[in-house]
Image (cartoon, rainbow over all chains, first blue to last red; front, side, top):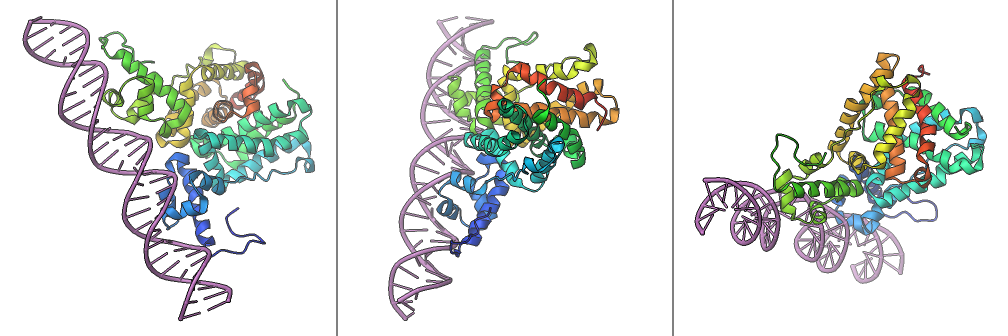
Length: 193
Length: 193
DNA sequence: TTCGTTGGCCAACAAGTGTTGACTTCGCCA
DNA sequence: TGGCGAAGTCAACACTTGTTGGCCAACGAA
């Protein structure tokens, strides 16, 4: 997830710096969005020179690509009872959002940046669609049902973590699961209306 | 909605220009978000000099405030049968979003700009909360239920109009009403889970 | 030690930003 | 017709942005 070397790549002396840049970049992108997160500000947070960011990540887009990589780690729908996939999914999303600022960053950037929007489309396609494929009754409706699910889950993230609408922020996680679980459950498995 | 004079304000010779600026500003803000919508680009679209924008609207924030004013024109919930307030609300939102780019602009800006987020909070508070107040069973739950409704409605707008996730774009309005109507209905009126 | 490689800083560039002020042109009323 | 205020143009300002290249120090192998 960070730039720390994995096996077969010898550790570089600059790995600490590279990681510091990524950490700062994630924070800034999450807080400010793409345009207002300046390379200078990120470099300052990481206590290095702006030119280092360019050297290690090429340009601003490269930095964003390196800093924001999302793996939702969605549970395998085959392994859980099909009647509460909704609640499980909502709880899992909630856990992810609560402690990963990368998701907020990506949502902010997706709202203003074409490349960011495409990245979110990719996550939807590669990570949420497969889950829907496992639980949807009619194969033809999989994309529709997955999109409905996305609309509810991303809508929660938008109101709670980005727009910070007070009562959405005040909701307890368990309340959210109780309210949204049945919604997602219906979108994924109920007969079409 | 536009800067056209209403009664008691004498028409100014520059009203056409003022309106052209607002129209161009709405388009740019909706398409690019706050930061990337430059005053120069807006002025060019309106075929006037950038300095005119400053003269008429003070600064960029003032232009945004003047260009983006949202009246959801939410139906009076008292006047409709309480068992299909969900479907009515979803259909109304959909109609508004389909032909008012201002809403897309505000959502884009709300995602990256603090002032934009506060504006959205204000719309929620002043326009959606009152509707919830009319149909919710328990007065104490009004903010919660309104926030849940907002999460689903804004989530739809996000996936369909901003992120443009393909299956969300492909949905027919009637499908959306059929799927989301019961959800909103439940959030507003069903006993809490 | 010596030398190539790597990590890091500094200063600068070109482009683009919001914003300002001086100047010219237009339209209307006396 | 003269004059006055509004409408509009032009050029520039101060600043920030991403990005570049040159320079120096630290390191590790020879």
